[in-house]
Image (cartoon, rainbow, N blue to C red; front, side, top):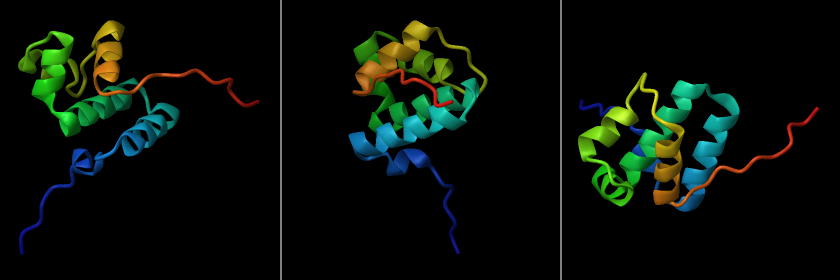
Length: 94
């Protein structure tokens, strides 16, 4: 019996699914989880395509979005724009 490893990137196949995934991680996750989630989205869309669009090499983008990385905020914003997403701020409920 062959068991394949679960990869969330395989299921991020629409803008709606990507937005829901990122919003969930933003609400529940820490910095590391958010960076990992953005990396999963970039992988789902295509690391090479995203890297070219934001002006980074493929290895540099992998490194910036790897586990434990601390990418610059500008890099995160560029990746989000390249994948067609944005961050919005809503008031926190009391």
